[in-house]
Length: 372
Image 1 (tube, one colour):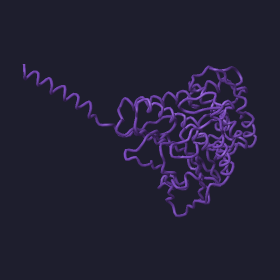
Image 2 (cartoon, one colour; image 1 turned 60 degrees about the horizontal axis):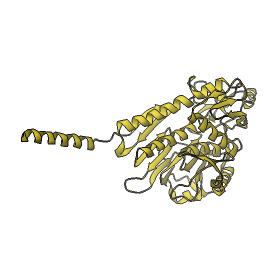
Image 3 (tube, rainbow, N blue to C red; image 1 turned 120 degrees about the vertical axis):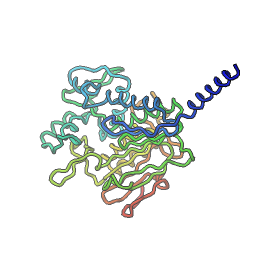
């Protein structure tokens, strides 16, 4: 009996040891949302948790894809000018905040830019420079004010209108992933959704995270700039991400909803640092289109707003006031809710003051000019 009892105790101890000493999985990479997505949960990276996170990405892809005819966005587009479409909370919520950014940026960010995106076909086999007549026709269908939202339906007022949320949905996805991590008590993680970065939690040694900003002239080479940051999201929009060249001219994917053409304002990239990746994603596109002067002015408006006195709704992802304007909480260690870093074609760097002591320039040709 003693031997059997001892054997049982040893067996239990072995099971406890094995369950407690399970080695964390390495970073996991999958294709999702039209890009390469990598998640690193460090010592807490279990198969179950990685599966939950990538299942979340898959679900969002199925809801927001413009290439999948069965997605909710595709259903909304197919019913443009015909009938409202019942949508999930995810879709209604992100369209609402997209319209808030459209109002905030006076249309620089416009979720109805879909007709232009489809016309140019950038990053597809059909990329081409459209005629002015084609662009004018597409522009007539770009108007965020013609999107109607009820509690559970979305309706585009004119036939031919198309939603395209590519400039915000990866940020929303990153925020959804961090929400899951918070519920699972994850201590630290890095999320990389096709270049949309979220450094989550605290590094084991307590130091800041290092996040690289690509060199627009050589995106596969060493980063142009390294940012030392607390937990936050860094999203960059640049001319090097998706483009085609015709007759020696580069046509990139950041389209101006007012002109119908790729933006040309001497900027090569804009990076946004923010606690919300949804906000960072939307503003990286918006500020690229607006340019650095108007962009910094917008950040000052966000900084000075006292919208927390006028809150209509909130959740763990974003806050929207009664005027429909996104409100962003500050990041611990920062004195402003959103920070920006602009790089132009002359290798000049313009950054929010809070970033000046947090950035390291890696390239000798680059020069930190200032904040405006």
